[in-house]
Length: 434
Image 1 (cartoon, helix red, strand yellow):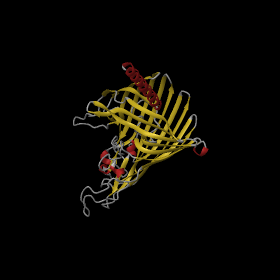
Image 2 (cartoon, one colour; image 1 turned 135 degrees about the vertical axis):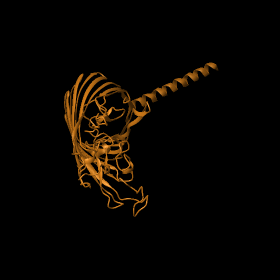
Image 3 (spheres, helix red, strand yellow; image 1 turned 90 degrees about the vertical axis):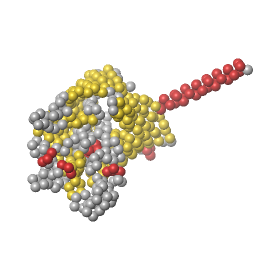
């Protein structure tokens, strides 16, 4: 009897182990983990506007002298972090009828809780693909979830965390995005919701401006794709309600009364890329109209308060562009050049007796400054790649032209008492990809 029990138990154990192994094989066939360990070290010659523990770099602070005439921001700084290490999981290999299903979930340790780095969500989406639609050879894909904004997906060749921002758009958002592939053309259209990178307004950065707008952010674009060349042309549209209800009593209305405030803005862009062997070059130009949710140096301004329930707003405009190139494999040389020019508001703003507009009526990106007139950056980079191990060093030279914040003209431009402020950044990176 004992022998029979031992044999039965052993058989069950072997069967369970075999079933587990088969299920594990099926599971691993669908799951592909990936990621990297990445450590940055950064040195700056001047205090600067930056995020992610000062690794996500924007621009140097304007010159500000104390009572002794000394610039309070003329202080060098150094930091050393591994918080951008990443962990992701690709899901693939599922099919339901003619529809192929894949997905992605991706995290890193950017979220800081005091001195402790915690996981935060970067991307999480499913992708539905229909190939050879109507036997035409064309295909359609549908992406649902949080992913890169179509205007931010193409990055310059550099190692910095900001990926060329603010010369390049930077945004990941919940979205429903469709790509239709017709020959060498890809037609893209969809809606997005700016959750993590939120638009600005009277109450600071908030998703309320689009949540109560009832109009989702929209993107449409077309791409041409060949073996060596890629070109994109597109635009996003966003409709915001800076006030959806009164927050204080007015002469004729009370707190909570619904308002009719609204501002509609377009952000068109063009992107070009060429690759041949070890050489790659790309360029992007964005005409920003209130593209602060894309981390652009922009926003919008209030210019008419004559109707208590229907304030009028006008977008701030700027031109933001970059060009970058890369050459090599084991030894890789890269460089990016970026330029931004503030163009002011579309509609004229009210001015005081001296002809200056009120900076308090301008709602601007939290990563920038209203008195920025123009800005450029050069980032030569050298990387040494050994298989999945990379060591790199980058020199970032950024120079910003500031004007007087208290003397903005009738288009919100800082053209008075202009001066250039510069910062030199040396960035080192070690990265192991798996």
